[in-house]
Image 1: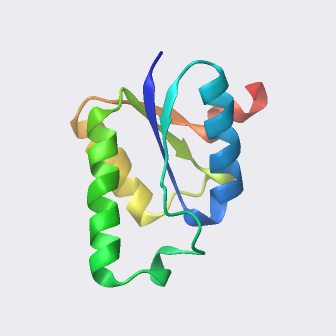
Image 2: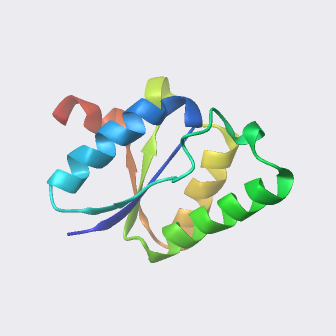
Length: 103
């Protein structure tokens, strides 16, 4: 079992939910953004967005790996910073595009 944090753009909510379910059913503890009910980060105040980003980094800290949901190889600036943060902590980096054929 691994603890895996899901990272990616809000526009890939559907894929995030699907991949989270898939990996959960494979016996992993999945952490994903809880605030996906809103359309995008712009729906939050600046203070809320800062807090959300901070909490997401805390999820990465306690994870064994991150799973980047990079549909059509799209990775936004927020997700790029999460990848760099995870790398700095020595976390395993998984990419949706590399895995989706097996899902």
